[in-house]
Length: 497
Image 1 (cartoon, rainbow, N blue to C red):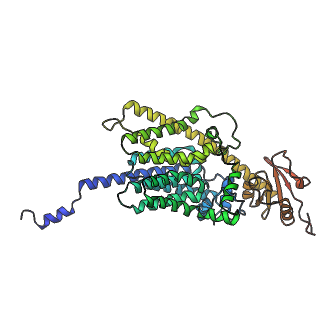
Image 2: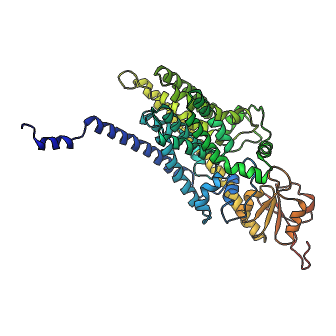
C-alpha cells in the first residue's frame, strides 16, 4: 500500500489550514478587545485618582450597605442596583480607594464581555474601535470608577443589544445569546428600571415585527427580573407602582415636554449636574464631537444598508435614540452621565463608519491623515475636560472631608444628625445620619429633629450667611469655610434641650 496506516494517522493529525487561520483570527480579535478593556481600566486608575472622595449620590448608594454612616434617604427614582454592586467592598471596608479600584477593574471586565457579545456581527477591529471611542469619552472615564448607575446601564445595553442581534440572526435557538439578552436587560433594570425600558423598546418592537416571540419574552423576562426589587419596594414603601412613578416624576421636576438639548450641551464642559442649567454654551471645540457622533452613526447606517446588513446597525441606533429621548426632551435639567447608554450604542455604528476602507483594503493617505488628526483632537478635548472635572470634583470632596473633621472638633460625633445645606454628603463623611423636613429628600419633621437633639448632637447647616430654620436660630453658630453650622445645646440632666 502506498498510503498505509501510518499515512492515515498522519493525515488525522494535521489541522485544516483554514480552521487554524480562522481560530487564530478569532484569538487575535479577542486579544484586541481585551487590550481595549484593560486600557480602559488603566486609564481610570491613572486619570481619576482612587483617593477621590464619594459624591452626593455615591454617599446615598454606599450608605445603604456600608457602616461608615447610617443609610441616607433613598428617593423614589433611585434603584438598589448600585448598592448591590458595591456591597462586596463597601459592606466590610470604608476605603474609597479600594472601592474605586474594584469598580475600575469590574467595569473593564464587563466592557470586554459586552464587546465580545458583538463578535460575528462586526469585525473585531470595528468592535475594538467602538470600545476605545466609548471608553475615551471624559464622562465614561469619570463615572466608571464611581458608585453610580449610568455606566452600568450603558454596559448592560451594549450586552443586551449585541446578544439580541446574534439571537435574531441565528438559524436555530442560540441559548448563549438568549442568556446574554436576559443578563443585559436585567443589569439595566436593576440599575435604573425606567432607563432599561426606554432602551429595550426597539428590541421588543423588533422581536414582535419578525414574530420572534422567544426573543421578545427573554428580553421582557430580563427587564422584569431586574426591576422586581424596585417594583416590590414601590408597593411596600410608596403605596404602589403608580405612586412611586408619580413621586419619581415629582423629584425629577415633573416629567413632560422639556427641551434639554442645550442643557446637555452646557454639561459637556464638565458640569456633572446642570440644575438649573444656565450660562453660555461651551466653545464649539468642546461640543463638536457631540454633533459628529449622530452624523457618523447615520453614515454607518447608510453603509450598512448598502452592504445589506441593515438590522445590525439600525437596531442599536434605535435603542440609542430611545435611551436619549427622555433626557433630551422630557426632563428639565441635565447631567452628562444620563446619555452614557446612548453613547455606548452609537459607538459601534460610528466605528463601523470610520473604518470603512477604500478599494483594495487600504486607507487613502489623505483620509487616514484627516482621521488621525481628528481623533487626536478628540482625545485632547476629552482629556482636558476630564482633568478639569476631576480637579474640581476632588477639591469639593476634600472640602466636605475638612468640614466633617471640623464638625467632629465641635463635638458633632456619631451618633449624630445633620440637616440643611448639603446634609447628605456631609453626614456620610462625618458618620452622622441626615434629615430634611422639606424638598426632594424630606424624611423627617421639626418635632423629630428636636427630639433627636435630646439624645445626641444635632447640627443645622446653611450656606454662609444663609437663614436657618426658626427652631435653630438660637443655637450656637460656628462659621466654617463653606458652611454655617448651628449646633443644638447639649441635653440637660432633665432630658430637655
